[in-house]
Amino acid sequence: MSEVLVIGGAGYIGSHVVKDLLAAGFKVKVYDNLSTGHKCNLFKEAEFVKGDILDFATLDKAMSDVSAVVFLAAKKAVGESMENPAKYALNNINGTVNVLNAMSKNNVKAIVFSSSAAVYGNPQYIPIDENHPLNPLNFYGFTKVETERMLEWYDRLKGIKYASLRYFNAAGYDEAGDIKGKDENPQNLLPIVMSAAMGERPYLEVFGTDYDTEDGTCIRDYIHVSDLAKAHVLAVKKLLAGSSSMTLNLGTGKGTSVKEVIRAFEKVLKIKLPVKYASRRPGDPDKLYASNEEAFKQLGWRPQYLDIEDIVRTFAAVYMK
Ligand code: UFG
Image (cartoon, rainbow, N blue to C red; front, side):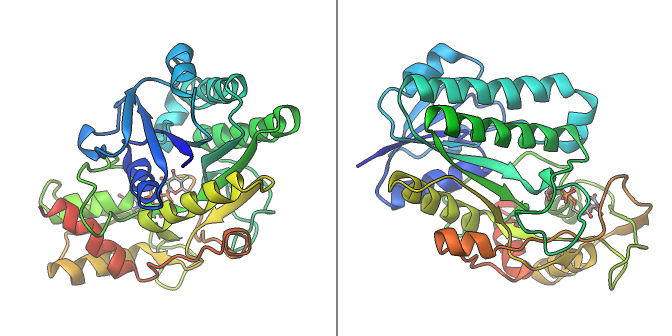
């Protein structure tokens, strides 16, 4: 059976991908520097190499007998990327160069890459499809666009086939409870709501109630992490079967407002959340949701979690333990 190297496999999305690759029968090797990934997210069935993507020698060695790479390791805090672009350039861009060069050197011809809806910037139309212009509003999104361009060139020049997966708002946790480590990313709405629910913060701020949406709050496309993981497995299989490269949105195609997220938490947890209505956060588009037709066409992928309450339930289960 082919071996897949999952770079960032101890992280939030990576650990879910590892679980599904193992379930699909792949041999899996995890490569992670454990900067944000957790040891408790590692599966004993997968080999583990502690290493950084900036360390070419270790990466090169780890790549020696693999058939495909799933590349998730990256810095991902949008705000931080604007304050410290050097960190993002180094990890997300130089790191990618190392991964692609190590692949070339070891003759690895397939890569599944974690891209983001942040590549699009302010939507010119919704649902956003893959042909929407790329106009990132932050440096994080820029690093994803640049990586996608690099993938195109390594495809043309080195014959490395890629699947670039543009995630919308990743959310939730493995329903079976096999992934124990929490994503330490308090900037995102769901973890913030959860911490307010647990009394770790006095209240939750809603950034803007005067948007051009039905209830005035921003609309996003929350996609369950197990649905994301399934798409990675399908993409690995398709690339290993000789497919050409592809760029795909991964979202539900359905929008959920901030107020709807809050209501879902209140219903699932049976509590009343302390909410403060605040002004808009700069750079937030009012509505953002995906067209996921291309992922269906290319991979036969359809998300299973379409109800925000179900996503919240799997999320809360990990935090309430
Ligand atoms: N929000 C609040 N209060 C908070 C935090 C967030 O009201 O305390 C609102 C935001 O204004 C936004 C929505 O909740 O309307 C979602 O915000 P997130 O920060 O969770 O997510 P974003 O949509 O801003 O960004 C996320 C990822 C990015 C990715 C993008 C792609 O964080 O990495 O989705 O669509 F690029």
